[in-house]
Every structure is written in structure tokens, then in C-alpha cells.
Image (cartoon, rainbow over all chains, first blue to last red; front, side, top):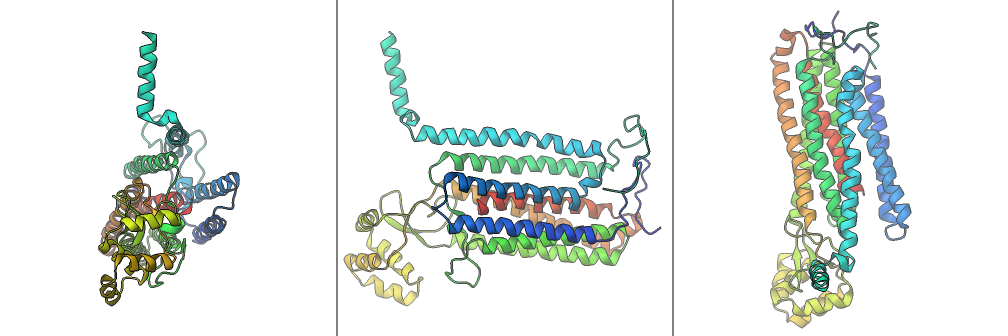
Length: 140
Length: 293
């Protein structure tokens, strides 16, 4: 038996690593193709700059983001061998990262609301202070 | 998925065995990487928040459109694609090194570790070129004092605002000093020294008419936070690449000295590999947030 073994009684079984390198090269091509599609879409955004509607440009960007998540999945699952670990362990890594879903929604919408305030009179701070003072004076 | 069958009814939590079926070192590497993912995630989300909060953000296709030795050719996405493929390829050589480690093939591990180290150094070289190009760039932009100036991309300023309309540009040129006008006019000639000398002899009005006749592309100064976020996040990532290269060099030396053969396994290569793949993983997101969208 030539395969390596970590002499640790706490490790119950070892994932089978006797396979060839075929899967590694397959994932290399998958990552390359996904990157090329991303670049093509990025170039499409550049070439059509200013011509695309808000929805069209947002959906192109969303497709690029989804392709990025696919790349991340292949890197973590195959290159980092997380897919070979047992379910208990995978869950302790993946579940905390779900927090990102909320972080992204919360902070980006906060940024967006900041912009909307900036573009309306309500966002101009001195005015707001004056208005509050005026309202306070009227109440008295 | 590994093909080894898990014994049916294994009680993972009854003691005497790792409930995660991995060694301590590997568990801790994964948890370190998870915490690092939160650090990078916080940086990128903060960048996104600021970007969403302003009306105009730098267009990556204008900022990153250069390629070494290509002069002033407009090549959006080209250089960063090269950097991305370098990192993907070095990730493949790393996973091949881990594979050779599983087979206890020392020569194979050495070969692929060397290739991974070269890939990392190539990436760092690309990043050094990119930063130098931005920090020494010369772009004409409207400054806060209402004059036009030639500025690079730094953490304090950048020229990546919206395009300046002709009348604003002309009135800004009228306010610009003689030295400022000479600097702007010499960018039209790509800064050749002899041209610069001749330009100094011209009057302001001669310089202004030369500049306006050239169809000069001038912009508003860009969002102030752009430089800090770009250099901060790509710098933090670049520092990870650098430490990854150092770790890989240490692993190469330990392989060469036969330490892992004596130990009977190459798990250290796996742990170094986890770190290296993480660096590639972060780049995938940096690539998305700074260059693609």
C-alpha cells in the first residue's frame, strides 16, 4: 500500500485518494470556461455601455455573480476537498457563511438608501436640522 | 465524494474519535479560513455599500484598460484575465501537489510545488505592475479648486469621475496656472522631455487653444473612496498571496529534506494547499467586485 496514512486513531476512515488526476483537470476546464463566459459578459457590458436598460445591465451582472458562486463551489468542493469530508464537518463550515446572505442584503440596501437620501432634500443635513428646530419651535 | 463507505450506525459523538473525521490541524486551518472569509467579506461588503451610496462610481473598463508593453492601447479586462488565469493554473498545480502527496511521491510533490510558487510570484509581479501603472498614471481631471490637473490613482485622489463637458473644461482651463497647462499639454505628447521644454515657452492662451484642439479627454475627479478600497482590498489579498508563496517555499524545502516521508504522510501539503486555494477563492470575488461589474 503506497498511499499515505495519518496514524491517528481519532480519524475513523480515510477518503479514497487513489483515483487519477482526471477530475482535477476536468475542474480546471470548468473554471476556465466559466471565467471566459464571465469575461465575455463583462465585455458585453463594456461594449453596450450606456445602451442597456437598468434591468438588462443588472441581470447581466447577476449572471456574472452566479457564475462566480459556481466557481467558488468548484474550488471549495473539489480543489479544497471539502466535498470529501463528512457531512458534520461540511456543515460547520457552510452554515456560518449563510450569514453573508443577510449581510449583503442589509448593507447594500443601506448604501442604496443613503444614495436616495443624498439625492433628495431630506438628505441634506443642515436643512433637516433646521426643519426639526422649526417643528420644535412650532410645538412650543 | 470519497468512495470509502462510512460504517453504518457510526456514533460520531460518543467519544474516542473525531466527530469531523479530520485531524486537529486541518480543522483549525478550515476555521481560520472561515474567519478570513468573514474579514474579506466585510471589506467587500463595505466597498459595495459605499459604491451603492454614490451616484457615480469608477468604471473598471476605464481604470483597468492597460497591458504591459501595449502602450496606450485600450484593452479592458485583458490584463486582469491574465492574472485570473495565472491564479487558476497555480491552484491546479497545488491540487496536483496534494494528489502526489497522497501517493507518497516526493518528486511529484516537489515538481508541482515549484510550479505553484512560480505561479504565485507571477501573480505578484502582475499586481506590482498594475499598482505602479495606476500610481504613476497621468490623467487630466477637474480638481477641487476648480482648475484642471494631471493626477494619478492613489488613496487620496483619482481621475475616474464622469466625463467633463466642453464648456466646464474650457472655464477650468482659464483658471489653471501656466505650469498646470504645460503639464496637461505635455500629456498630449505622452510626456516627451523635449516637447515639455518647448511648451513652457508658449503663452497660456496658446496652450489652451492647443489643448482644446486636441480633443482632450478630461473627467471630474473620481469617488474619493475608490483608491482606498482598491488598494486596501487588492493589497490585503496580495499580502495573502505573498504569505502563501512563503508558506509554499517552506513546504517545498521540508519536502526536499524528506520530512514528510519520515512522518509517513503529506498532510502539511494539504493544509498549505487549503490556504493557497483560499487565496484563489478570494480572488474570484475580488475579480467580480472590482473588475467585472
